[in-house]
Image 1: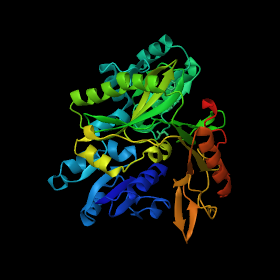
Image 2: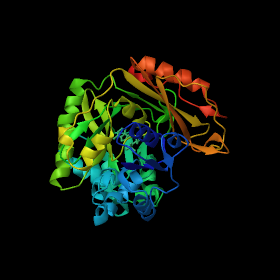
Image 3: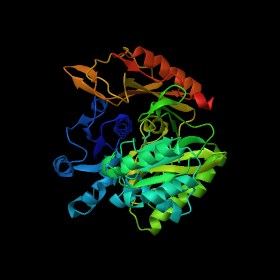
Length: 424
Ligand code: AMP
Ligand code: GLY
């Protein structure tokens, strides 16, 4: 069958890399893709949010499966756009409905959903500029640090963690005045959770789910988890503390109630759910839901899936996930993100990337911000390449990624040298 993947990052390269290996795949397209996706399929210059253009392409190229990588088209309702048209009733769509995507698209929705379904999360309340006084009173009830979240999508920048009450009130005012645009007109204030983070992923058809490998990502730009937040500087899977006991609690207290909650609200959900969790002394709490795979988590999770992913997607899209199982590789996969110097602040693009003549079999280079220009591969974003490696354990996987990371060059290349530091 012909398959179209939407998106252009490392996550989409990992998805396309996996899909390309399936004997069920005929033509594979990635829109808009990057220099890496062009090595496993055909890039199409389509904007992932331009639904009419995507519709035309799907008809022209006889696409049977649409895999949506990033959250924005999902939150904008791409699932409903196609599902509402009879002629697309045979199209397999991997991603939730617009209502399901609210789990990521509205933090206030996600919070009330968790409350309704008794899912452990930080104590919270939502406010807008009319309820500023109540917001201040709620802050007074909490211990610092204070956690403020813009309700809507803010490209990973909508969460503020502040030490002082006065700073929190100032930030609230800034948000109500439009600091994060419409996304911040409603603000969720919540209790600070003190623990260690990890992410768990499932594929669900809205009734059954398959647990995928868990991962931990490293969001801060600086070593020792310091400096500004980024999209993610590296990731590892498995996560040593996410053992059988912990994952059992995650399934019982979080995953099952989430799927049941979607079901009882009659929300159509056929895609990935990403549970961003905090482990507090062995007990899991939800920090956030995402309605897609993580990036760079996908660059370690997907390589660990030890079977054809296309039949899983087919089963998912037809509501037949129950009969499926996921086989996972033993050992570990780690990824190290090579970024443009300056990221997540301003940085330059268009730097030529040079690669070693041979990439060892235990490593995979997933492209993120790259593109082909005059026969060369150049940087085209903040996060440039995810260097993923297999190993018998995390240390071996990381050592292999670091060895390869050193041999790849572009001007002002930067990467964190301590991925996994807190797990040893
Ligand atoms: P989010 O955009 O919801 O992923 O939040 C970004 C980051 O902020 C998370 O990965 C956590 O590190 C941190 N964070 C969010 N909410 C909390 C909380 N209630 N307590 C502690 N840290 C949090
Ligand atoms: N790496 C975090 C995310 O994808 O949201």
